Length: 304
Image (cartoon, rainbow, N blue to C red; front, top):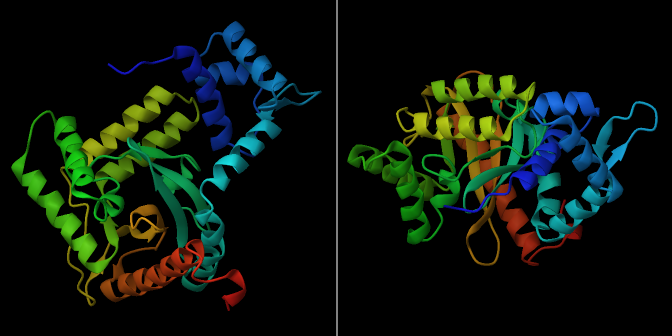
């Protein structure tokens, strides 16, 4: 069993709450209520974090916000992920041209994480804001897995079967077909599902109370329930109309593995297959330019 530190989890819960509400400050009472923490314990954590600059406290209201040390930490992390710098102007331009909301996702071993958001937010993202973590387990994060080595693919599939309690051949085949389709056309298309609607409701509910455990449970249920739904659009008929949730395009740098994905959402009502192909085509062009910039094959001055 993996090691777990409860004191660390409490501090992370505070940071998660503040990151998800960047324009709001929280007093001690509100913080303890939302996080279900002992008041003395919470006060000790807040005081320590404020002393080290990770939080700042308003002199009159005594409410807490993220502090300058978090900014420094964010800049240090950003320096390890400079490709985001090139992504911003591309996605802001796409958002204006296509009137679609865009996000950037990254991947760790266990999670797919929302890194940035541009333009209109789809309800799923809007409920949690930046930092949304979903399991890196099939069928979630397929756009990353479709372009990853076989060992990553098999581990991704295995985690899905484990989440269901047993191996399911029909599910396995469905997921493999989805990956083949994504890799062949170069992008992923997901459809609106009951699982997404339920996750949206859960995130909105949890947002008012806040619990890392509940957030993780909701994300895991979402992944589990998606396995039973028609989630990936494997074939696109330009004349047909689809209830699209997201369109995702991988961004590659150096080692030819996806370092992040561009994700289009908030596409409105049912859209035609031709519209899907148009949006995906523009996203792929932007992803290629970001790759060229990150690899030094183009310069910002060369941009129109």
